[in-house]
Length: 77
View (tube, rainbow, N blue to C red):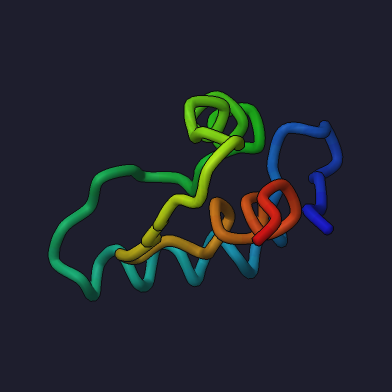
């Protein structure tokens, strides 16, 4: 299940997840975002994914898995 932060906008684990995100972003040498994606962003991006046929989705980079957790709950094999 996707967890929401105190204001219902963030689907991550708070300070610890933010620290992991920043550490991995710096380690990777490329930063595409300075904060983890919020649940609002995740829902907007994922609404374009077709639900009527199989799809392959790969999440990579210094992220914290927020998209993977959301999609695991929303998409069914």
